[in-house]
Image (cartoon, rainbow over all chains, first blue to last red; front, top):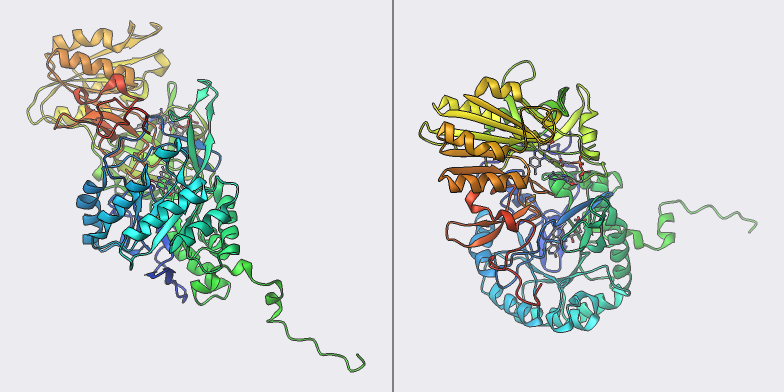
Length: 341
Length: 285
Ligand SMILES: Cc1cc2nc3c(=O)[nH]c(=O)nc-3n(C[C@H](O)[C@H](O)[C@H](O)COP(=O)(O)OP(=O)(O)OC[C@H]3O[C@@H](n4cnc5c(N)ncnc54)[C@H](O)[C@@H]3O)c2cc1C
Ligand SMILES: Cc1cc2nc3c(=O)[nH]c(=O)nc-3n(C[C@H](O)[C@H](O)[C@H](O)COP(=O)(O)O)c2cc1C
Ligand code: FES
């Protein structure tokens, strides 16, 4: 496939500052900390027209389910201040078509891949994990647990520690032990830390924070909800502080768990903010709709921002905002103690 | 293959109720076919609070000249995004991705073609008319709008078509009524075998049905709200019947915006028909 010409104003292909941008999520090592976000990049083919997707940390694919799925009726989106609401309803071709068409393409293209899975029952997640186990070319699995649980009157799995942990445990058990499992959590809970800890105990090798947060837009012309599905997930820069808050809270209780940060990132500094709060790598979602080549720009701008702050390695910046207050003083020379004291 | 580029505004000029924006887009004219669209970012690419690109049919292209490749878009000022675009002045920058989508399919034989435009929906039809005429096709154009002010391209139509029929709902120009009131007569007279249409969904549905009744092909360009325009978000879907007879929710930004009229389930747009592949079962999602 030939590539679209992207004309950068600045940056883009400038010589990269000398910062080691290697990022790791458990045992999965990537040359860049910038990934796509599930549902915001399909399976990479379309974006590959705008930039070389093998340069990303990894492609995170649209959440896949067992069977083909039509998704919801339209309108599926509404624009909001610095954000958007979506209610796509997990439209997808089903796992078999995904493997034959999408994963095969990604593998051939040589892209690193995190496959996102979704289910209506714990069994469906488990079945998906077993199918993925037979496949080559998967670097990690992201478990989207922001799905209605058929067995629990449509309550999403991510809302309760027990149902979230149940899904994570069965996916972990059914997957290739060498492949990290990331549990993607919802911010729409009262006590995120408890759910994060439950997922970690259930065997999650890492967490993806955050999925969209629920909202409603009422159209003042029709005087009805703007989306056919009424509620939708809010994403984009508007939710960045929520993402940073969630990453922060989880990092406080789980100092070592790998975190894939996502929510509202549109610049190198946004990515840095999530990293300083505790993210080991960062997914770019809604921003791709506006600027398909943004992930590479964000990578280069992040490298510059790290260099400007004296970091030689990206990994040194992870959770840096949690450092002890007195650490800022280490560089300052000890004042001479006057003799008379 | 689309190009993402920082375009520079050349001119913004009034055309009745609309404005025509001419903007540089080097490399885009050579790739553009009639029916392609462009997606424009509103405000500064990296800081604007209006995140979603706005889609516009490509009305015309100039591949050479002092600006080295420009495109023309016909824009109706309906909201914040289009308003911002029409406030731009010469030299202002606007980020563009184009050409996007699947264009109108052109007949191999020199058949009789009728082109139907509703409001600014006529924007892509003149480039199409020109290419059809180059292939020796007869071209008849039907333009309709609510009022005379909301018609676009009447003069251009007269230059490129054998006959031009105008309708307005208030009777301020041409025949009072809707394009579909006149279409049957025009098709009859021209012996048209293909109908090309762009405009509101209701008009497309009626055109497509009429074409089917008359045994003509129809090619309809739809306008569905889009978040990305490049096929990655699944927001712009409509129910379309595939070659295998199965209905799927199909992305209108990459598999459209031009569809064969008889394949689109017009009455079901805005719903997921029960026989769609992967449709929710009772009590399901
Ligand atoms: C393929 C395609 C071709 C189009 N061609 C033209 C054209 O040639 N000339 C023209 O004037 N308009 C055209 N439109 C419609 C144009 O995109 C909308 O009028 C425009 O997006 C409105 O933006 P706004 O911010 O001014 O309005 P607002 O109402 O404030 O927009 C709010 C949101 O709704 C979306 N939206 C609103 N109206 C429409 C609409 N009719 N279609 C799709 N999305 C909409 C916007 O993109 C935005 O995300 C086309 C749309 C599509 C999908
Ligand atoms: C249109 C759209 C579709 C999405 N689909 C999925 C999905 O299938 N699975 C998932 O885990 N998250 C999905 N998300 C959520 C994103 O992956 C991401 O968590 C969220 O949008 C916040 O990041 P952002 O602000 O960078 O977009 C979707 C988001 C959008 C906007
Ligand atoms: S607008 Fe995003 S898939 Fe069509």
